[in-house]
Image 1 (cartoon, helix red, strand yellow):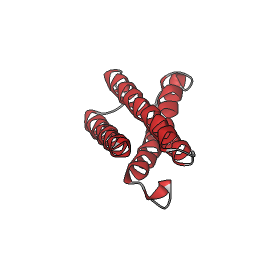
Image 2: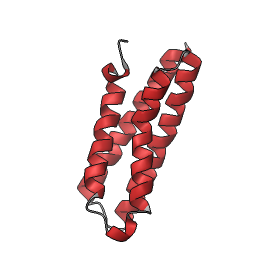
Image 3: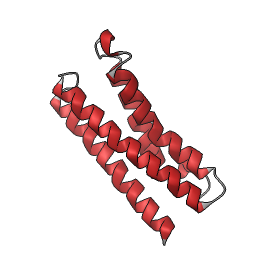
Image 4: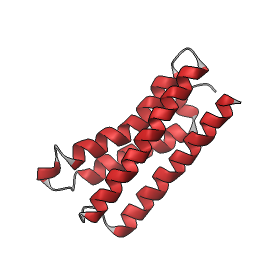
Length: 117
């Protein structure tokens, strides 16, 4: 692997973070320090932890950060679902974002498994 940017899981996580940043601009202003803040923090934590782990000095540390990234993806999925229940995200958009998040979780799981072998 040349860099974290070459990892498909990083590329997908980065794209998801951008999509959610754009989406949350449409959320009610009173949610700026609530759901918007939590959702943005969770979704950006996915690629950020991939980057941080990739640049560490050991596979063990990389795996640790990938696990944090995976947990952040699960948290993102929750906040998306919660936002959908409040009517902040349309059903088709919610379905697409949840599917993208689930793909990222599966990819992180496979990457972690490949590094532990």
